[in-house]
Image (cartoon, rainbow, N blue to C red; front, side, top):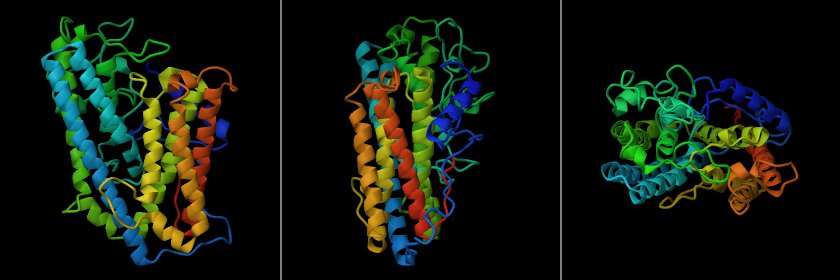
Length: 411
């Protein structure tokens, strides 16, 4: 990627035009997210109010959701820790084998992280405006030249810049995250991805960073320190979020469950904003419109389809409460009692969109699917999925309104 915030703004505008009402944001965790998604104030159609959930039903659904969130972040902490161990092993003994093991561990952790992104958009522990670490965990897009060398600029980046970053620790690299611009991302999943894969200069494959970057290159030692520090920082950030949802004394969990109806509003808000805005708009349609692999989410590793599937599954999990190790009454369960038709319609959409996202993998990598003419099978499938995710966002908004809640799909 290159520095081009204006490009992204323009691209997002084109994506909006494509859907009539989509969404855009320049950054997953920045402070300047703009928005334009389907309005959802009041949600459901006039005269079709379903009725409110009882206090007990709202609390039951919110409690199960909170259990899911904790379990999901706990799994993330475990996976990120395993990735850190693999990275430490790679840095200690760089080889093709240890590099591949570190990449595999990144992919495994990333697959678990995707579903958790539905737990955003209501200023919870992950993206609370003052202290939420989302921007430190998953900020995107990333200008790789801010971190390390790139084609045509071999001296670029913090890795080689001992004057700006004399000491490499989690604290120092966090201090310069997004310093001077939203794409100046120095931390998180995508910085680790870049330091493992390197720039994606291939038209049909991921980046191919050589092991010599960690052995004989003049910046090898600092690059290894940087990579290891990134992994440690990610574990710390995910742990802080997990602990806020801990059933044994998690501060935010207690606050969340103290107002069950606001909690249900937040659940629907996260589902709708991710479906219609962040996923359909920012992550799919921007890249669809530009046909540029620079705009795909995990561009260095070509892992974008896994990200998309993970996000789609997360929306489904938030509604159904289906997560390994978690039992309880889901939001779907209580909605089905008072409005089985809306529950069935939303459940069907969730199932279909997860299946459609998974099916894209059979057609190629994301950066290959978005190119070509609009009639190409892969490109048409990507477009259809984005539209269906937008429609799913509308269903979520309508359900919220029918239940007497008011949500926005803005990101």
